[in-house]
Image (cartoon, rainbow over all chains, first blue to last red):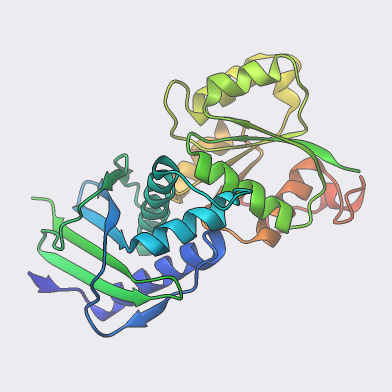
Length: 151
Length: 143
């Protein structure tokens, strides 16, 4: 597995920060340590004629609940599992779309329907792989992406 | 002056995010209606007038493009401006929704001021929400 280029890492960070700050009202801090306590997540696959891959966002339960509360503003503060799942899937969908359009706005990628991960695996496959860890006031977040050139 | 807005997205979370950001932008909303897909949106539009529609593209049952085509076939509804709100930001996609008759295109993620600007542009109102100056100002438009 080849490590991602610095340029890709910068684009990825920008894509993640933009989505979380602008749309989800969560402020993340990059973490140099591999974090633990990731309880759930969502995954999305993408491809065009040259590239295919998968992105995952993994959350602590506390962070996912906080994000859903931020988005939905329930009067009693409670969010259901279904609502959390919806929010987590939307988050990975937006990060993926944002990253790919920053990568090259001329390319048209097909994005699959996001999948909720109740017990997320900690690796993704691909010729090139990223893992970015983040801390926040409400718990950790991990981003992973694996991609391969289509042959 | 305030406006009726219809948000069309299959994700309740995303409808809530969009509603929140429009509210944060200071754009004057009277009613904010929600639909989970194009079919539900058309049902709402059969009995309720809205001033502008913010719609996703990919939705089950009826997506944003199909809904847009249906609206354009209707004498009354074709006048309602539709702004496509999507994660798909390719130039091809923008061009496609433009040729289908969408009035605007917002790529997620977006800031409150971005959505306010495009709402004012497509409704032909100035920043205070009254009709006037903004009608001839296309600055910042994605089209």
